[in-house]
Amino acid sequence: MPAPCNGCRTFEDYATLVFVPLIKRVLCQFSRIDTVCDQYLPVSLKAGTRVKHGNGVRRRVTPTADLPRNWSDFLHVSENKSELFHFLSQHVASFNFGDREEFITDGSNVLSTTVNQIDTSISPCSHEETDRRLLLHVVHAAYCGFTKVTVRSVDTDVVVIAIACMQLNLPKLWIWFGTGKHIRYLPVHDIVTALGPDRCVALPFFYAFT
Image (cartoon, rainbow, N blue to C red; front, side, top):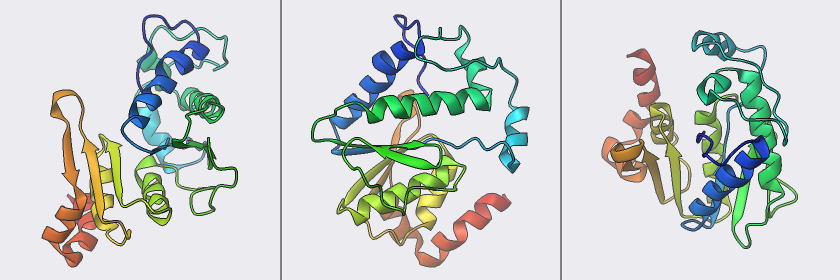
């Protein structure tokens, strides 16, 4: 989640000056973009793990509310992120990106700027973590006729799951991995060919075990 810019005072400013322009920049390179966020369920195994990451201050997310001074502390609170993601998804869904397609998650549902009826394969969705949920969007893109898909992530889990999910009916799958000067483009299709089907299927177990 990008930090607010200097000109941002409210959450409306953040959506208008930071989040939507970020999506527009990406859409200059691609014809479709799927923005997938975590779900923050009150009763889950992950809820206890998130508490260990640190404490923050609960802030309500409304268009006119002032942005928190400490963005990192704000994002430590699951309720803050849940409200923020809902606010941003509603804002993006109402924006006109021309002939470009934008799909964005809103809790268990998916919103789109171009499609009224969302396919049930991606919405509603019970996956809490983005690393698994985004692969459903990859499969959906392949079903819609896309032959080349790039996944943007900094999570090694995404790389492992993508390699294991080799039956995606997708000729080219890249992972745009890392940040700053350490960005790499990982060709999942080539890695799958090199490892072979048995190693790909077994990879998640050995990754979790080690």
